[in-house]
Amino acid sequence: MVRDVCRAGAFAMLVPLVISTPRVHAQDTEASSLQKEIEELRREVKSLQEQVKTLKTEPSPAPPPQAQQAPNAAPAPAKPAADSIVALRESWRQVDRGMTQAQIGGLLGPPTKEIRIDGKLVWYYYYAGIGGASVFFNGDGRVSSSQRPTIGWW
Image 1 (cartoon, rainbow, N blue to C red):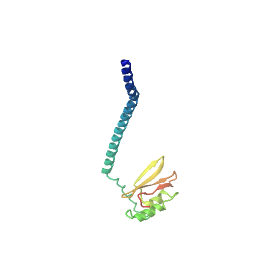
Image 2: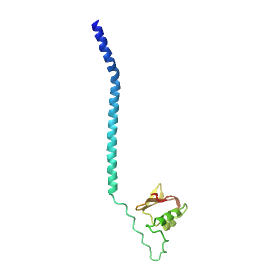
Image 3: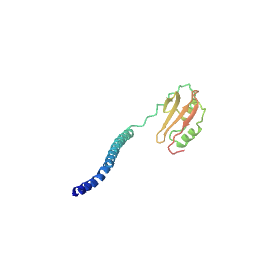
Image 4: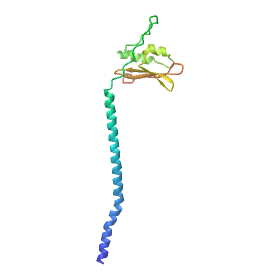
């Protein structure tokens, strides 16, 4: 009888231990998984910080040299001075759908960069201290859309 009581007592002590073991194992697995995820995120943050550091040390792209005008060519239309934000803002407000490349060139000057996206011409403008802007042309060489500089001056 004493043996039975001892067995029953031992069994009673083992039951909670056996029942809680899967739960403890699941918690360990979850903690291990979370620890791995934390380490991955730390590596990603470190990589992004290094990329930002590299970008901060790279010089800003220089605007392309101005095109030389032929001696007999008509004078180019007046364009706003780059240092005049008010004039620059007014020029960009005049950009409208359907304008030609010549009209945009006369209004904004030559682009900093020309690129093609899906076969369509895009003129990209970069203004130091202000930001970038772009003009998109359709297949006919006319403005289909534009994006003004957006650094808080509209």
